[in-house]
Length: 294
Image (cartoon, rainbow, N blue to C red; front, side):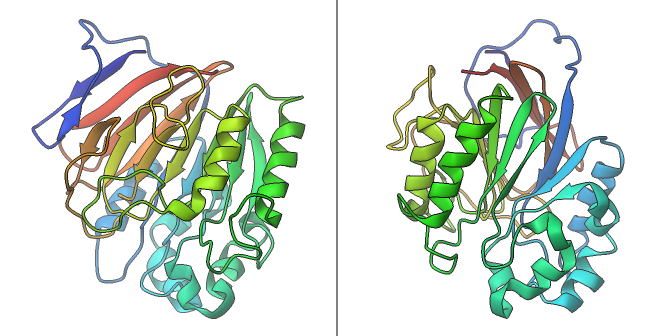
């Protein structure tokens, strides 16, 4: 696996070998986005939206899209003028702040059919040779929870089995990370059964938000053991505009950590591999690398 770091001193840790020369520019389907995004009390969401203006392809969100409560007015006044200009190409994830509005109505009304069924919030789609699964990690409010055999887990297993017949690689997205080194919010262990289903079905990547920082993990099992053959690589990308959080002592297998710099994660997905790059709003700090599918 190739990993390269260009830094102005803000990246806290990075493991992997350094490259002598830059790799060729990757080609494939592009997905770009972040979580923890829009607030009328901040301009950082405008800065990350400006980044998206320069990046083609699909846009994803990773939850907590409109602060503080995900109301219809907050989506219209705060999210709409910034990330909202990319709504036609956006695939959203629901966060916990959306549920500060009963039944997350502001979220489901704003994104419409793109957000999945109200009361569920999970859905999937294909992006080139890849399959993309969007899940609802608000396990205390989503219908049936997140446990093994729950409606969401049963749907996920059936969806991944069907997708395996037509696509080769899979990326999943939800809001709350199972693995995190954040000092603000610890691991959300309620999502472990869903992570187990991802692992059982050979999913490559998991994108999360919730903590307002960037973190990349090595491929892991649901128990947190490194597994380069079958493990799921988790990214925490809560850098869409919310105020930054501090880190505590890093978790095992945490390979890169960055806070205080809003930005978006850009994924380039080819037939049997993926390239990632964290794109910051300022400076030259960037975590980037390449991985292959299972």
